Image 1 (cartoon, rainbow, N blue to C red):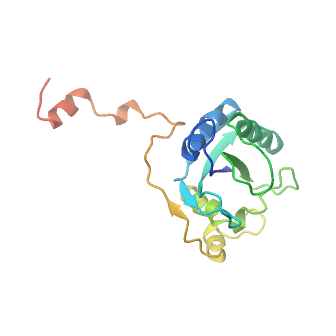
Image 2: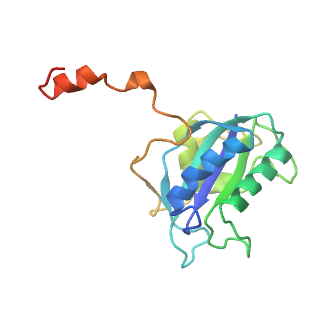
Image 3: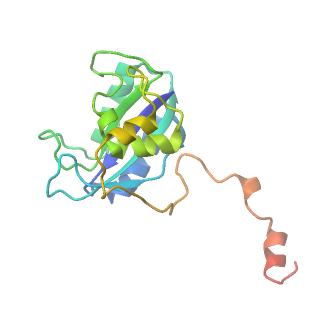
Length: 190
């Protein structure tokens, strides 16, 4: 399984942080990355603590024929297209895409796999648990639950309500009510 962490705390050319994150999922398809599933979005305070705006974070489960190095290059291209400006480490940003795990591989970077700080960040681990509660850290073997329990609490971490259809998976036609069924539910017949 391949997991990508997504985060943003500034508006960018694509809109609000949440709009940019949603668009980044669509942009990944242009890079040969298929989105399988995405966690809920979470709001979190910046790490390390600062006066920056809160982040919106999530994790995506993806498939790709790209290897880890080429996938990292693709993630950087999407960040660039959507307005990411790299200045200093931990700066506020309109988009941050990180390769968290690539099929359980352990690798010295770039990219370093698994992501070296993911195990210490609730804003990655909580969305990861949303998608893969059975996930284990590739080098330590720790469960995602054990990693979460080892992290200091973050009272600012909040799951956000789902307010949009995912851009990577269109609504299936069979999931929509038939016109006649909708009319009957409103007391009309066609």
